[in-house]
Image (cartoon, rainbow, N blue to C red):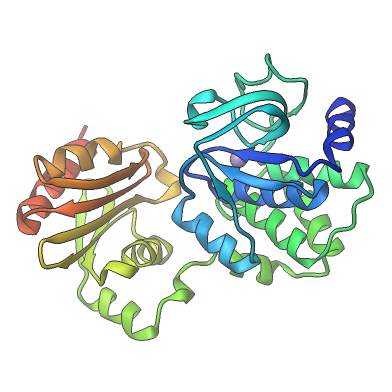
Length: 311
Ligand SMILES: [Mn+2]
């Protein structure tokens, strides 16, 4: 950590870029935000932030710059990133790394790094602030706790030491746990009417031992409704919206079942030769935007899910 802090001190008056991984989650964005506050720098995301990441940005009130970007002449900090593959279209020069992923491939080329196998990058950023005696205001505390809550699935997977650190962050930022939870709680964004309509229209299936909930909503709410269904207890949520030919789908799996079914594969097979405008995500969360025959896609997706869950 000493080397890393030395690097931070060197770049602090030079408006450095704080680079975080693509499809940025709460831990990456919050670490980026707090490091940008610490150094007077700006946050760089290679291409896009995740949908819940966008929520966090709106909630705290900060913005990011997007790539492609040539940073080869600059000294930068890379946070919550383990691999060059997570940094598409970014040219790197001299950099320091702060990260918690095991097997970090960026450490070798780093000028300095702070690397620990802990639950989140945000708790490491907190240690840096403490070491540098940087004051923790409400926004910093909210961001750091959102990062910790995001990476530990609301503390479900957290080590005890992480929970203690979270307590310290809340205390220093003068906020309570409820407030920290609210930053990441998604479904309160929905109107009661939208929530209830999506719930009433929902269909419930047992896929072997998993509860799948399928429903429809309007295009702006597919993501929120999917997260709401997971919050309500669905093991897998499948949410559709359709306007004319345009279809938007989110397929999400309860974090407790992480990676049990590869939803990205399910989606790829399910949409068949439908027109793809955008397809993104991973095993646990997939988004699709495009055009096609909704009944055909729904049928295919259900079939694929049945197959994957009976394996
Ligand atoms: Mn992380």
